[in-house]
Image 1 (cartoon, protein in one colour):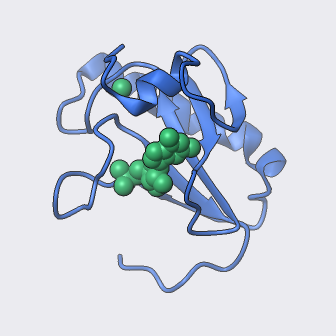
Image 2 (tube, rainbow, N blue to C red; image 1 turned 120 degrees about the vertical axis):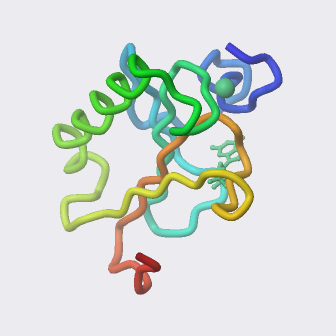
Image 3 (cartoon, protein in one colour; image 1 turned 180 degrees about the vertical axis):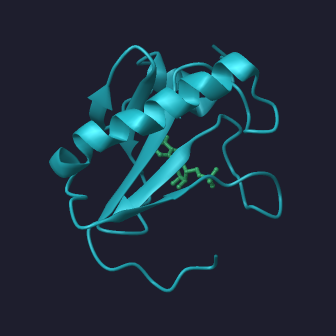
Length: 114
Ligand code: 5GP
Ligand code: ZN
């Protein structure tokens, strides 16, 4: 845990959040400033800044977290589809340095960048 990291503090329960799913590997919360009708953040519980910094073990943990989405998307209002985004660094406009995956959906999203 990094005590200066807002997502570590959310995971530790020090900062309140709207949790929609939690298990031993990850927390999924509602984004405080949503950009879509459903805008969630998948937070691995372990602190690392981004996919470039992550270890092999962390990458396997992240893969497990993403795989688990298949069992919960319908309960999250994402049954008609969704978009996963992970911003990295300045050009990616990353603002919180704890790896997170945005999960966006709940309507047909604007045309994609990629
Ligand atoms: P980034 O810009 O790093 O890709 O995404 C960070 C996201 O975290 C933003 O969408 C922002 O709204 C969200 N965020 C920042 N602080 C908090 C917080 O304290 N609680 C919640 N739920 N979301 C946050
Ligand atoms: Zn953190």
